[in-house]
Picture: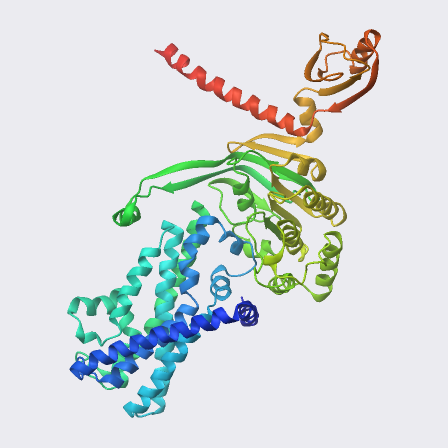
Length: 264
Length: 344
């Protein structure tokens, strides 16, 4: 599995999408409308209280946008691939991955690379840029670097969790309900973490570390006080993503091994 | 050195018990209750380079499982499989470069794109040089007449066309062994015929070792001099088609066209199996006298217009083999209670 092979696949995927151009454009349009609606709901919510846990509208918009942007990056490499994995394992199409001279994981995620997330990227990037202008952030080199690393890490956390859920397909065949759980928990990170009780905070920090996707990096960038944590702890954020993803990848490959010895 | 060697291979599937409903699905995660199903039971055989072998057996006999073990998809529960002198599972990536695999009912093509796109991606993944790609594609295109639809999207192809494409793709990287799982299933006679001729050519001209699973005995007769028959996971026959024929009684079918309907004829040694007026079909089992003796004996009494003698087709031979096995099975099961009774 090489980068040129990935680009080759993307070229074919684009060609495939263009076979149903109208359908593709319409679904992107629909996604933008749907997420636009989400922004509006949060905005209306804030209009009533002015701030939520000390965060005003542009700050929340920034927070939400990082969440959506990193989700889109991660999901384009994982969601549909991992959601359909249980079906592929059940009906045996997964086998055709194992007869190719490629890494099955890298091939699966690249073959299923989802161009549809361009909608999420477009809307979240636009709102993020608007929010950054509103917030008047100090763009030091460190801050720029930190934002970029945090976005990469956030994408890896999302992809990692979904990869981990996908790997369940090899063991229990069914994994759909775990995706439901994931999306439920993901709804929490639309708001700053302190809004919720200790249990949710711990859950989103340690068990399913979604707080590292947007809350922690945004809080550090916006100089919010996080439970009196020292500044250097901000550098946990870029580490959590690669770590999550690495664990998920090992689990996934372990799942393949298990599948090979147990059989479908 | 055998290109494939399978020794004492067993594969047991473990099926975890599942419970219905949402609570059930959570419960399923923690249950350790499972049932075991033996898909392949202590099978041993080896295949030499250049052979064409038919692997057959009824549904659920463990044919696909064996292919999956040879291609490195699954690990055997016991025993050892060696393909190209390697353990397929361990050498999966390396071996796959030298294996072609066609799963009859699972396409590996890009549904909405022209066939050539799938081929070119295959060329890239298998690192095929321009020259050998051109050469192999030419070979397949000509013998499988792909040129009519090679630029069409896969979704517009008929099942027969798609299978031809699938087989061609599996051969683009010049594999040493070609595995085919039910390559002719669901195809019409013409398509089946073309595929058989092609596979025979691949085996004879390119010296590619072929192993195919099938239900269709014609596939075996036309492509594979050797067949391996499995039933309920166990190997029940390994040898040539001719040897199986003689092993299971050398039966022949004699069709006699009489000048006029002779009524019923009783000749010991011949069994009447079909009667269409003056045309009668007999089943002859070799028993010292030749079939000609019988025919001339009949001809003395009744005027005969025409005689034809046919071998019983392989299909009925296999059917008899299965019947025989089922009877043996039943017998051993029926005997058991008596044995138990005797022990008491």
